[in-house]
Length: 189
Image (cartoon, rainbow, N blue to C red):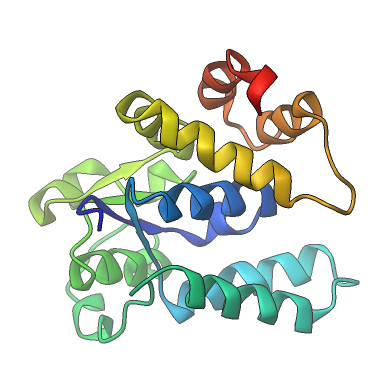
């Protein structure tokens, strides 16, 4: 089992292509993904707010599948740490508390300004943009990163995607560095 552990912030779980790739990559054992039920609530609430026509039951099933397929992913008992954490936005303190309780080294988030290094460093944490994180994971083990992409793309049935369409979908997730690395292997995706 991987020892490098990260908390996935709600903003990286919100877009399905990114969430899916992060989970396929975690399933290779390259890193350990963790989150809380509160983080689930946040991404689902925000997605339903933006796309009210989505069936809530489908998102609930996604939540259940995520929890079932990522070993020991749900962090519990973190609430005791929330009040002792200082961040620009108090609503983000639960993410840092979960990282502490879940023994994570990083928080994967697009919202780097909400997790300033001067607040996280004393706790042994770092906020990492998903593109930086995924590019680092690719550099660490390209074969697992490619395997995750292959598995994700092959799971896309409705509609299926060509390798180019798949990479374009990841590009739209603000992952230019990862996509440039994967494009070198487009013929095997």
